[in-house]
Length: 106
Image 1: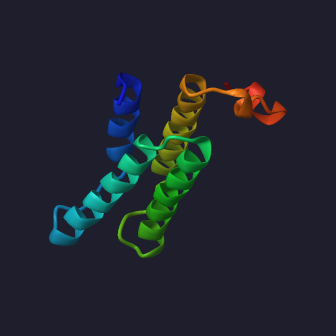
Image 2: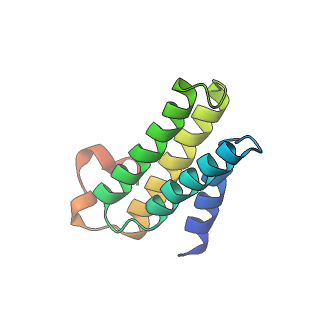
Image 3: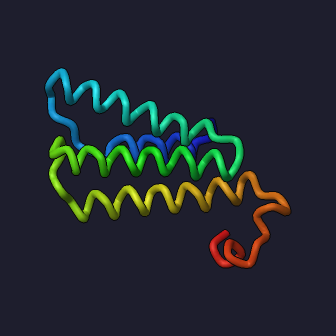
């Protein structure tokens, strides 16, 4: 894992606050596993799938009233994942990333 990937993973792991309870520790470990899946992605589709699972997990925690609603936290997660995705595409770029939709973002 390169240094930027480690930094993105660390930032994303810290984006969601968890209670200092047994349940909170379980939720934190699940979140950290999801972030690790993003970090270990080896293709854009794997990255997007892993990121979607992580984002969905955060939303499920809100929907289940396990964590508070926070627009600031949600925007932080989105911005970290988006920047990480841009970094991933730049460092793993190939002809498959040269679609018009992604050209302005790489």
